[in-house]
Image (tube, rainbow over all chains, first blue to last red; front, top):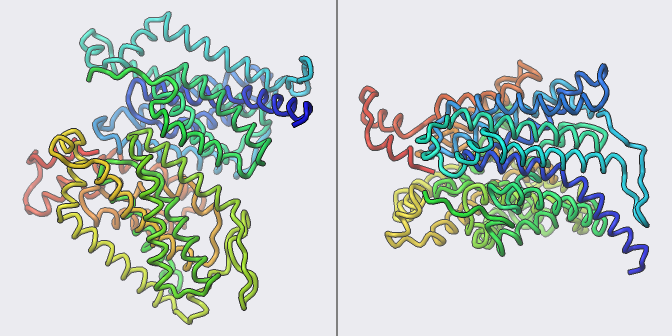
Length: 294
Length: 310
């Protein structure tokens, strides 16, 4: 392999890792919800894309930073909606019931998007799309760099929220021991609802970032996004936020690398095989949560 | 009339798909791999009849065996994990299968021209029924005879020792294991039998539609496969059939007059069924009530049992 090929390879890897922050955010959302409720919310990625779609309503009157902010807020609203419709009034001792209700929600959101936009992809406002930074032999695309920075900011924000606020304390307590948390006087239902809102905020950000990085939003994004998010969650280790971040960057980088080496149509085969390798050799993921006492 | 015959064919194929997921769900595992086994069966049976001129009667069992064998091979590593991890592992498997068929080209020369899978363009010309003069009614009879046979087989399995083992594992793995049940054997056997049934369903699907492509076998198909038994209720085989008729017959075909709004309503109705009847349409308390023929309100052990299921 010549030096030029090698540089290309590193460049591809860099781009992929930067785009991987969106996967990391989606993975964090899945992991947060799994952490507190031990349930999967399959509609999460669809809600994230949905929030980005809804934020397009202000795109004609507001500059793009406002659009991204609106997407994040709408993500939070959709998160609360999903919690109340799909989880709050269902018996939580039946995992299949909430699984199916979130699948129903996923289909509903996807169809709502298709119905509202007639299935056409819509342009999404990008940030710094023409800007390119040269760092040594590599170039960093401005839009990807922005996505990377936004993703990192969201992660730092989440870390502060989980570690410095009372809400974060309650979230971690409920994730560790719901019964003990209830005995200490914490509102488990309220904490669950706010976790959905937090995850929704991250999801909305991820949806906006995807739109900004790709330049368009399409209803075809929802299913691949759901699958990638779940892959990231499992590789990172269920319930582990740092794991989801590292796995997100890993999946983003690996995906771009496989695309560079084997072409776009075979790319996902290798990503999935990577997941299988993790399941066989390290079923707990990168950072498995320590086993609870219950 | 042909439209209704076609609809009945779709319902039959999807019932088989739902039954394949029912086997796996019975052991308490949520698998999204059924769509992958369905795809394997569809391609295997289609290739055997078109490319090498096998009769369908031989191609279907071979497709079932291939799908079942792959299910067992995948089952050993995949069933080491459970819950969400299994959902993701099986999703990954189904995506791998889909993408492999997306990149899969193998064309051979036959008297009717070049046939075989052609990568992203799909696999067309599976015209076994047409070239052998089968009418729609014949096809329908074949499909429903197979549905009946599979249902009878599963009904018998459910009442036999194997069914008891599967249910025991599904109700409580720890309790089952401490009673000396081999968890791996129970899960992998359910996975294998489910895979074989999905293979038959896939073989029938490819021959009734005559053209298949990777897009037919997305995660959505696998989601439907597990939705049927869950919506119908895991306690009875009839529940799966009821759910397929409800979804394919009434929701997808019966609501055509709603136009675009139909697909919107579809997700909402799945949600509604789960909110109103979290144990499925034909849940254990309902079945017990029908069997005993008495008024509700009795909170017997059957309700307790179902709560712990899954």
